[in-house]
Length: 535
Ligand code: ADP
Image (cartoon, rainbow, N blue to C red; front, side):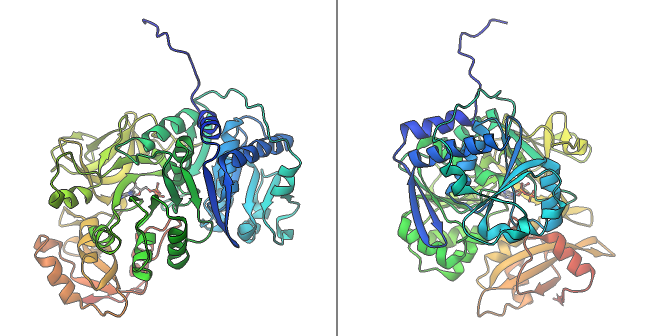
């Protein structure tokens, strides 16, 4: 080997943390708490992070120990994001919407020693307190009644007793920095441990000009929860460049969100389609003119949603794709260069092209690699420096293939690298041996003005094995006719794709991260709970 002459620096969260605090000390973090907004500078947040590191140290937290957070998006959550990995411990962001059993499972599985919990969420944690086998201390933030949690420590009091300076150790770049569990739609949740190095590199990926293109002028409204796949990398990437961060706390419903946007005037945001849909339907009059872009993903982003944001708010919604396992940002759907404006939507509707360093391919059921010709359809496999190589204490060999992660998403890739996801493997509808894309059908159904949300599931069929059932949530004040919806689809998809059966429902069940829960829909259909209309 011809050795490089470069300095050998372990990459990690501490570098991002230090850079933000020193170069951007006056940038701000606004938290929208119970009593409205409060603002802190980066310098103040960083000093608190130092105090937190001291406090955790005094509680016996050292390298590799796990510290769980059970918090909304707020300043102290950010302080934990900065302090915990920088001191060599591991930040475990707990999803506040997990079922109690799953919550207890992930805390015990991760062996969390300390938990930091928002006062408003303490009752949820109290439900599982007696099942927690490794937790030694619980730190509460805010006022509340915590008797059900046993002995607790108060965050602010703890920090007030600590020095705003900490001697951070050198942390090996391949050690774990943060831990997220998948939402476990099938089986127990699986742990993904991001390394110091992967978070550092991913942050650069996120800020890249072809990705979110953050600069210090950005004002980032973090709607996507910090407990969901590290808020898509935005807290670290934003901090690194000195962007102002706006943290909405529990205020994620359309009305308060619109108010926060109008008064804080963010330039950038990220949210799942359900949240954007909710805002659109409840506050079409909101002033979103400060936003240059909203990144959207977590499930396929309907074209109708992107068009509605163009028309209603003149705000670009850009589709991105990723998974907890991919840190999560892996691909983004930007039109190719010199694309005429009129053609842009066809590219925005795709799932996207990968970020540099991330590779994808498609494989058939037998594991054979298929061509990137935009036609061949198979499971997307992915690899790269911020893609998980295995799960925490779980071999799950079936999830990997020759060093690539099997995503469980089915789709196509063009020669130019544009990926189009047609389904999740577990949601595909196989009719007469051929795949029907539920994502395509949902997209088209949601482009009908009377359809607010549509989820298409496969239901058993004697002749074809499976046929699509379209579950429809009507737009308010409308009463969509299944035959009209079928006619709407007729001109746009092959005849054998057309659902014969429709179910008009009030709401589509959602998972803990706000996605359509098709497993729940299939179960409701199996037990005869869904009333269907035959067209
Ligand atoms: P979970 O797997 O528990 O739902 P994740 O947030 O890790 O939690 O979900 C990742 C999955 O979300 C991907 O595998 C994919 O199925 C889906 N997804 C994310 N973004 C998109 C997108 N833009 N289009 C289609 N599916 C998406």
